[in-house]
Image 1 (cartoon, rainbow, N blue to C red):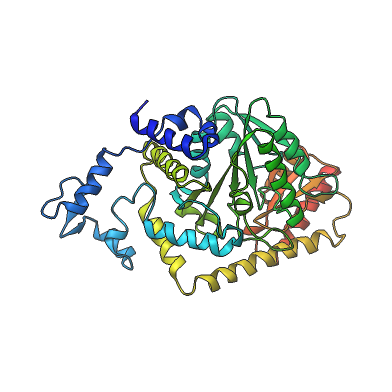
Image 2 (image 1 turned 30 degrees about the vertical axis):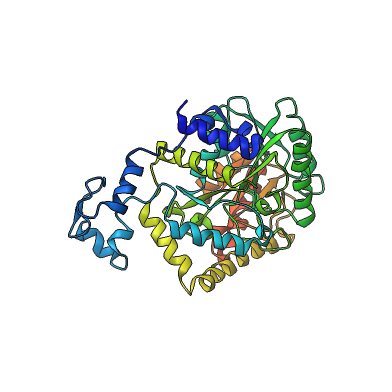
Length: 431
């Protein structure tokens, strides 16, 4: 094993041996090179004042070489904020500003010990880093039965982890914290589990309330007290889009500092929060009491980034940073939030109107981009096919009964027509 990896592992053991035990084989072996090209280039940038012949980019006239045909479309930005490689951990100012935003929006993080966010190539990349660092073949990865299908690819297919699902809802349509607890405690013999918490939930658009949040935290703490090392990933992709009475903070704050056997990992990003899906800017943040543990986890994360994408897009980071610093940012974001909330409320009013008879129920939704119908009389895939071919309406079928509708991409004035067509499709199939 490389001496740098060994040193990081020793730092983890001395800071919190349970976090070391959570690492996958790859997680134990990975490190960020201290004496490689990047570190030598950084040293040269600071000290080589005459000629710096280390940079892996082309320069011209004291700045990065670039094409006028590209720069003219980006003239509001300095070339040095667009064309050079971004640091593997991301632009330092962006990391600082995002951390400040996390604290502002998550008061539970006040006085908690957590690291500086590391920039990722959006949410999927952040989850992939978690999988690489912590998931070995056969490790338990626990998340509800209503979930984003990419979890299966990221943890199950890529890392050969054992996927364990539990029902998302109880019979009275609350978050099934008992199901989470049972799935966790069943891992006592393994001594390790990875838990994914995704709120607002994709596909249902559900975020638990305060009492349910306390039950989730309690279940995870109980598992830790039973001797299970728990990596808890809060997938906060749709954070901030809370339309009704629900948690309005990430559980990352409540989980931070909760127990030495719990490692909270926050994966979030500008992707959906700031409506910049194609920019691919996300973040991964760790919480731990030990500064040595946080530093070691950051170095291992940078090792994964260096070994996969090298660094995330510099222009995208610059654009996001510029937006976050804009005096108009909060007002503009609130304007878009109001539109999204209006669409969600309209959907709920339509579904509660009694207009659509007895052909479906709907799962609770109070946040995010989506909602799910539970079909009573027809097959979801058959309905999806019928809708797209007969009425030009696209939806997502999930299993036999569930049909996901993204109200995020339908104007409020068109929602009634959309659900009228879905209802008509059901009646067609019934006939």
